[in-house]
Length: 121
Image (cartoon, rainbow, N blue to C red; front, side, top):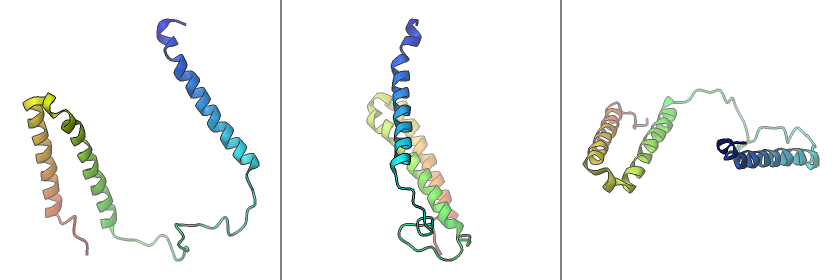
């Protein structure tokens, strides 16, 4: 092998061992594990709560909106970490860029507040 492909050999070996280990564990647990099936074991189970009623009942879109907004604002906050750890190196350009980012962040927040996206009935 030439120099560039030989650098990938350790990664290839590690990947083969990792995949082999996963396959071996799956096969062994399937072979030695219990396989008794009953109606009680095949029943749906959710956090200790007995299943009852229809799971297809509609519920408020506000739940999904709250979840999406949480993820959106949570991901935006992640962008603060690299800036906070290196803010001295970014200088004035980094400060202005982050000020623009925060301004757009607050603009989106104010828009959602005006649309009453955070109010529950």
